[in-house]
Image (cartoon, rainbow, N blue to C red):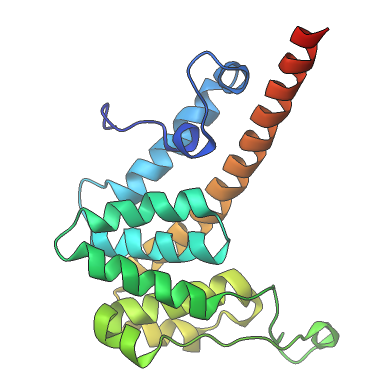
Length: 210
C-alpha cells in the first residue's frame, strides 16, 4: 500500500481529519482500509497486467462522468493530465462523456419471460474524432464500459469478443470490469458520506445557534 496516497474516498467526499464523518468511518477501519486497497490495486498496481494506468484512469473518468459524479471525474481526469499527452486525452474522454450521457438502465433481455422488461436506449459508439484521439483499444473499452453502466442485461460473449478483437487480453478485460464496478461502489459511498457530512454540519450549526 502506498503510504503517500491519500484516502481517495475521504478526498472525494471532502472529509476532514477529526470531522463528524471521519469519526464515523474510523469506527470501521477495515472497511475504510479495504476500500483504499481496492483503489490502489486498480489504479496503482505493482504490475499493470496488460492495461496501462492511463487506460485505467481514462475508463474511470469516463464512467464517473456517465454517473454525473463531478468530483470523481475531475479526480481521475487530473490523473490523466499528469501523463504524457494527457491533456488531449482527458479532453477526448470528456467529449465522449457528453456524447454518452443518458438515463438507464435499459436494454434487451434474452428471449424469455423477462423480455417484457425490455427497454430501448442509446447504444453508445465513440465518435470518429474520439476514435482517432483514443485509439481503437481504448475506444472499445469506453464502449464496453457504457454497456456495463447502462445496458448490463446485454453483456454477452459477443460484447467481450469486441474487446478481444480490439487487443484486450482476458486478464485485462477482467480488470476493466472491476474498474467499472469499483467506480459504481466508490461513487455511491462518496455520495452517501458527503450527504452525511452535510447533514452533520447542519446539525452542529443548529446546536450552536441554540
